[in-house]
Image (cartoon, rainbow, N blue to C red; front, side):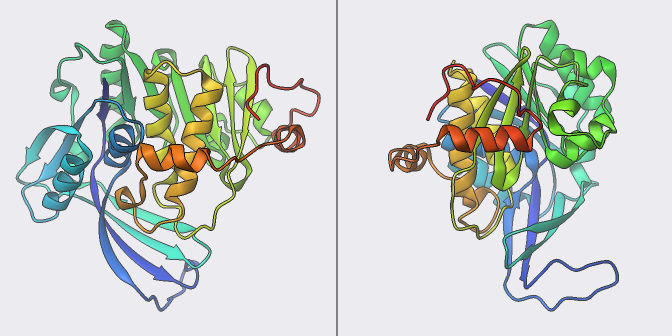
Length: 320
């Protein structure tokens, strides 16, 4: 079983020709609300797409924004541990999605900021604790400390980017970042391989958008090129990746297989609008993989070069 502890937001989404630059007003088009929040998105991905038993600790206000979030999690089969915070609103996110599928997001944490150490439920039966950084960092450290002490594997999606203490890094089994978060985490402008070498975590996974993703596992580098899809909205693509990666690892898949499953799921999420609404089912991912996507050694080599690994050998046992 996976326990996700983290944020839950109601997303306010506007589509526009492009994302506004500072001081610019852009006339948008469609407006919709969707259940979101990194924690809740990842919980939905674990349950619906990853196919594993999933529970979530979340905080919500006593307001109308909470209802669609709870309904979405329940529909996905996620068992909820809800902290109700009467004097705080449910978290919200304001998202502009461009015609190219890129997004800009501003989050108002609200009730999410009220999760503390005492709220973590018992960890009996939990194989992985999945965390993000949209709740207080002190709470993240406390949860990771308790899970680590009880032999539960800790996976952290280091987003939104911020500094991580040496103690927190020592408690993490799997760290997931994107390219920008990796650069901020290491305070480095070097290539990806050099940045990865600076992080004292046994397994680090970096998502690279249209390039694919790379993992450094006990000193070995594994690459997974991206699946080609028609992108509509990248919102929750990274969360889908994290949730399916956690679910795959909890099912004892090897890292290379887990990267492929997570990459396929996140690619499908990009073909749909919204956050949790865009997350595919496990059956959809398997059908997508059966269409015969084949990645050549040349594609792996290109990705390795992009990451600064030109002189590294091919992934042992790589999936093509």
